[in-house]
Length: 326
Image 1 (cartoon, rainbow, N blue to C red):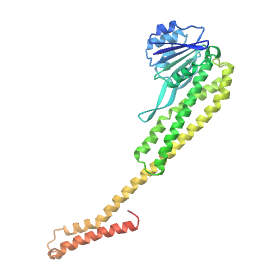
Image 2 (cartoon, helix red, strand yellow; image 1 turned 60 degrees about the vertical axis):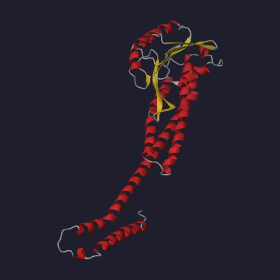
Image 3 (cartoon, rainbow, N blue to C red; image 1 turned 90 degrees about the vertical axis):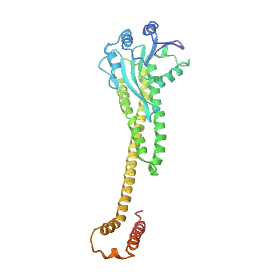
């Protein structure tokens, strides 16, 4: 699906279609536009879009082949960023990761979204307010708003992770969890590994912005990034590292809990074996086929042996409880 957003004065014109030609015909080169390509994997259609905006043809392969996460600095036809955004939506106990590419030019932004990024959809709703005039503020300011909402999304994600870890910590510290508790923590830790790559990409962009040769942002937007977002990125990065450390500690404690429970089971099995070892010896002794065993001729021999066995079991259990082995 293609969604073309044209930023006219004090309002946004929206056009939705699957027809690339129809969308490209509605693009006015003098206006700021945002083209969202959602679930759009038509290689020929993407090639037409890339050509229409005068971008290098190699961008098509980069979009389809999932180029490495981060800013591409090799070709200077646009600002090209491949992204992975961790969302707070859960699928099969893992956080969903939105993947795609963002292309920024002088008066356009194109987002190739493998799955719809709801952060972008919510931003568009906010842009409908007349207080924001992108036609005057510029396309680089629109990217600033996108970037800002991506960071705000991580506050929501981290808050959700913290609440989940609080519940899991109760299970771990009360030793009421099992291997599934460990698996929950491990799955959560694994599903958040994308954040590290995302923040590395963000830090690379922030470093590039301060380069004198960086042409894609105006000085006013560069100032917004430096004044408002750099500190925010540092705080989020520290919070992310703290959450990862928290997960690691919980995993280690739960691993010790599981090992302790396993050891306790082994000890009980060992104790059970030691209780029945004397009985096994007696059974083996009287199971030998010797001709002369005087006890076998005694009428009370059988009940006496059974009594001895019972006393051995009872005595072993009492002793084990006194030693707190049971």
